[in-house]
Image (cartoon, rainbow, N blue to C red; front, side, top):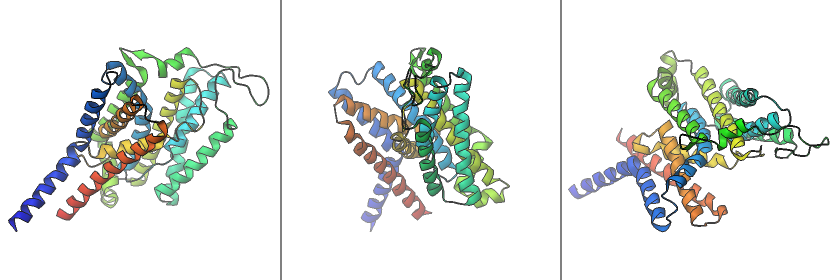
Length: 339
């Protein structure tokens, strides 16, 4: 009997340790392994490249984080990013709009997508997964129709004849390709937004309301919280983050590529759920999301150095997501059984 009790306690401690420190241990192991097989891995230049590569995924994942905080989920962030990407590029290349307008209009587009999701989920009552899945297809179809299936780039031929009159300005490209104080500008943008999201979620009354809405909506309503308004705002924030990711992507690659955000959706979702288990927080959070994106980015960077075929990367991403979900839900089940 005592042996069984002792064994159960050891299993419980092991589960708690895995949940709290498993992601950190995994990251340390990944870094040690790739550093041992390649001198090019553990260098300042490579790690700044990793941070730049995860900047766009992190912005997408922060949007998903806000919707998960209120008990929802947003599958449309990838399509919203794609729409933002081609809108940004078209404003500059097709219509020669000033930079301030090029930056503002995509954000407005993200707000509109967020409002559509909020309307479907909060007003009509469609489950969040189904509503955002529908929005994902609508937005994807809209941005392909808008561009007629073509990517947008400098001096591109137009279907109406001639070539596009505008070009990407140096000031705009600096947002995605420039450096500031030794770090790429996208890294600074990512870090600033991660810090802002962390402060909002963890150190403001608004953040507590968001978590209260997702944790126990009925209790939040009894406390006087307008949960419908809270969810509206959460999905709008998600749309804004996705649009910012689209602007950053356009500035980084210097073109408006259709379906740019589609392959990044899975990475964003994986980053959020890996972030659940960072230091045992057990809920969506900004710092965990950043850490999750870093784990995936470092892993993919190391696999690239190993010359692993790119088409095998999805296997790795899926495995990381499964492990993160397993750790989260096993811990949650044990904690619920003790309650």
